[in-house]
Image 1 (cartoon, rainbow, N blue to C red):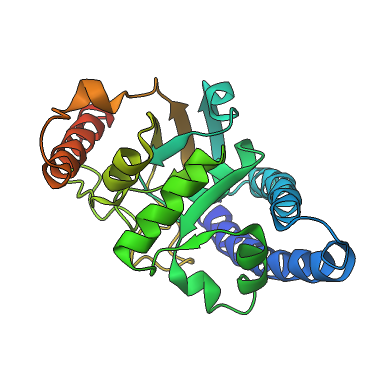
Image 2 (image 1 turned 60 degrees about the horizontal axis):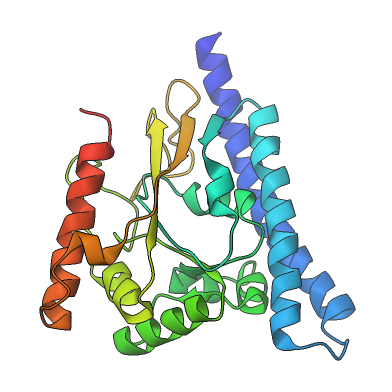
Length: 256
């Protein structure tokens, strides 16, 4: 029976991926036909798009739960619903950003540039005003800092891609540079997925023997002024802040 259940989860996962791609395409098409002809500010259209993404991802995650593909729990997520936060998270699974968007009603995000090349996701990420991670480094930092100053919340995965080894994290300096540029606090989110699934280089049909359980914990915000020596040059601050964040996540993650 366990083998039959695993086959069912492979079929269900394939179905879920198809729903995701088709759903993103339909949402973008409907928005282009219904919302975008109206003479509204671009910011208002983006906010409406993100609201729809929030509701759609909320339903999507629960569809996967209903199909028996996964389970999940959230801790302290009310802390993620206020505007103007820089939210960072470790990135063990392909589904991490979908989960985060499902609990944050109006958020911006730095996402893989490949989503702009995918015909199913290009429309929705463009209409939502998300930032592709292939922007020039300085331009990306400036754009992200401006987004935070405008009161929007921004999600970023400091690793830049999915985790290869959750006990050997490797953070890039993007999140630190953005926090320093915007002079904002950092809200860490700890993601734990057991057993691991949809990791980097892992095919969608390589499902674990048991359904994965996702746990998302919003932690207290970090004041960068208390984490590093802000009297040092900016480049040094960014390097030290990156190392600080990486070390903190290594402590927070469950032991091997």
